[in-house]
Structures are given as C-alpha cells and as structure tokens.
Length: 225
Image (cartoon, rainbow, N blue to C red; front, side, top):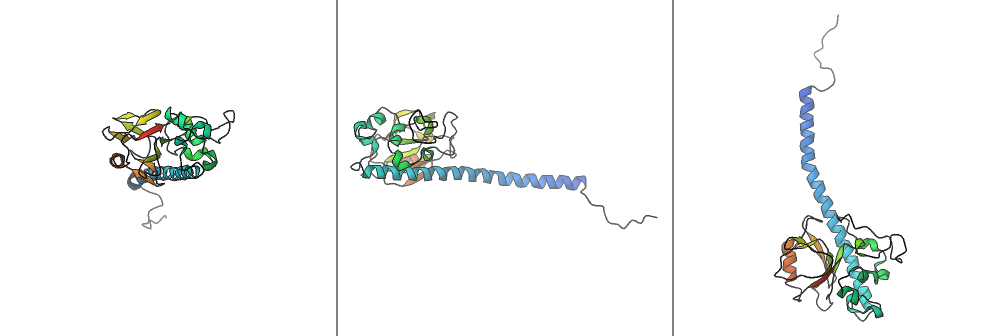
C-alpha cells in the first residue's frame, strides 16, 4: 500500500511557472533599456576617442607645416586647401595619412548610413578598401579652424541638421541664427566636437548652439563628408 508522505513531487505548477515568466519579463524590461543606453554611450565615447586622435594628428601635421592645418596649405605644398574650399572633405584627412596611421579612426562605430564603410588603408585608388572618398568618413572638418582661436570647430560628428533637415555633403555655414541640431542617426541626438585647442566635447543640441556663439567666428564654415 502506497503511503502519501505529504511532500509534493518536483516541478512547478502552472501558476508558479507563470509567476516566474512574469518576473523574468519584468527584469528584462528593466535591464534592456540600460544596456541600450550603455551601448549608445560606448559609441559616443568611441567617436570622442577617434576625434581626439584626429585632433592630435592635425596638430602634429601643423608642426611640420608652419603651424597651419591642411585646410590652410595649398595642394602644391602638400595641403588640401583647394579641395576643402570646394567642399570636399576627404582629401583633408588623406594628406595627414602619416599622422593618422589608419583611416579606421575616421569612421564612427555608430554610423547608420548604409552607403558608408570602413576604409582599410590610405593606399592608392587601386588598392582594395583604400580611403579615397567621403564614404569612409564620419566627421566634418572646420574650414577656418585656427590654433589662435581655441574654441573654433576643428572636427566633429557629421550627423547634423539645420532647420530639421539633414546637412548634406559640401561646404556649409553654421550660423547662430540658424537652428542647427544633432539628428537621431548617432548618439541619441547628441554628438562630439573637436575644438582647435585639441579638446573634444560631447554636446547636446542646446550646448552645440551655445558653443557656436563662442567660436570667435561669425560664419563657422565646415566641410561635410
């Protein structure tokens, strides 16, 4: 004769299983947004680190070129001034290939444009994966950036909008009376700016607009990739 000891056999009842599922769902709902925020933050930090290296490269290049940036030196003298004035960004970075070492730092980890890609080297146009166009560039360059004006924009994330419209490739003027902002394409409506003093600042849209008033330049011309 089988005696009932009063102990329940192993396993969960349906109610208990539903409770476990509900608790796990609640935990996922709380943890996932935090993980996503950390992911976006990490991308912003990576872009900031990229721009610090780019800023250092500008300064190193200037030391060998009478304290002038590539945008201030003619093509015949090894610079990229004429290209920049035409609104073409990538040659400005191409002439600094020795200082940059790799074009990979010119590409934002959170780049969302499917037409862009990471270049593998600074080789000739015939080299596979060479840096030869704007498609491998995620950052703009300040056309008039000057070491004597430390708050001028030297480089920065290119996910910019003016009056709610994406800023296209070419020569662009950022004016204080035009509502410039960050798009949602990267860093959750935020971005990074590399200043002429060598620092890199993470800006919200409000701080970006404020920074434009402190550059010492009324036009703030940039070359967008």
